Length: 226
View 1 (cartoon, one colour):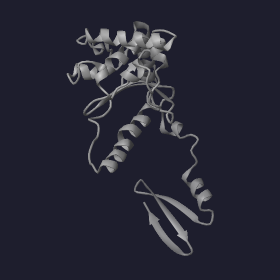
View 2 (cartoon, rainbow, N blue to C red):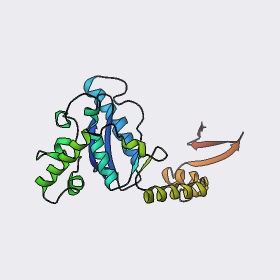
View 3 (tube, one colour):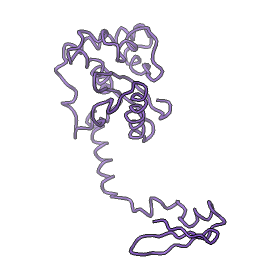
View 4 (cartoon, helix red, strand yellow):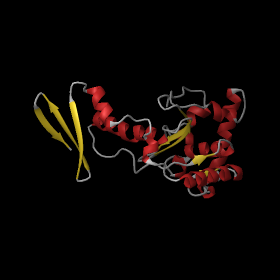
């Protein structure tokens, strides 16, 4: 979490997938998820002499408004084992953020509980009690999935929040694709890169059949790279 400047408000590890509620401050969600799903999988497989996927499928992300909607998803996540019939109460599931948030126990380094508890009270014990009561109330309405309120399958929030996000998406579409020369405007030319990297080498570039061929001469020996 620290590496990508993330905050994790809730999580739940299931048998073949997981749910995690992440607050990002930088546009690096894809990079961080690649680390979590890809690099971690490789490490896990080496450690346990396994091959193949650890988690099922590609990740799906939902953009959530930082208010009651975020709190609702925190509850939804920790109730997943109950909803799946694996346990009767969220406390009985040992692989979620429920106990770390609702009880005075050690909190994992990657988890932050301050925002969630702050929605119930300033005093930690009172806040934990309020959180447990809030989650328990969710057991009675588990059939009311928050996903029914999703807009465009990716936005979860109030009307103003949804309108703001939709307008930003429309603006991005209006801009269109940024021309490649503008994207790499500050990138040095290939010729300058070779000149800096190999100052003693003479470089020649020529166009042939619309392909760039680099011919390098070094001590009267010629090599061709395409």
